[in-house]
Length: 136
Image 1 (cartoon, helix red, strand yellow):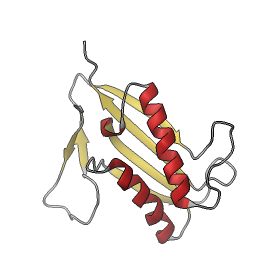
Image 2 (tube, helix red, strand yellow):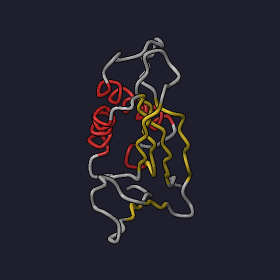
Image 3 (tube, helix red, strand yellow):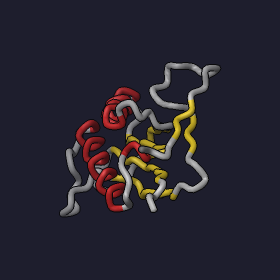
């Protein structure tokens, strides 16, 4: 069972495909994750030129980092999705992958087009914060 509670705001547009806020109980352990990048274990960039492919690899790497910290995607309390593009269609392509990966856990998110990301040929990066309640 997740510690994260998604908060809907009926007064705000329902166009967004995510909750507008999320909370975690006082006894939750917060996990701050570095941006998940589309980087293979050998250091190469995955899916060069492919926004959707890079978003999938970012999700895969995010899940690996979460598991190492004792968490899963449904423990994520917020995300920031960075896409190196000024084309909204490319932002939407990356976002669709992220949205599908999270499924019904429509975590509060920010989608941003940026000029450039840190690795060669990198198009997508996903930052996240998660909250878990450890079982005693």
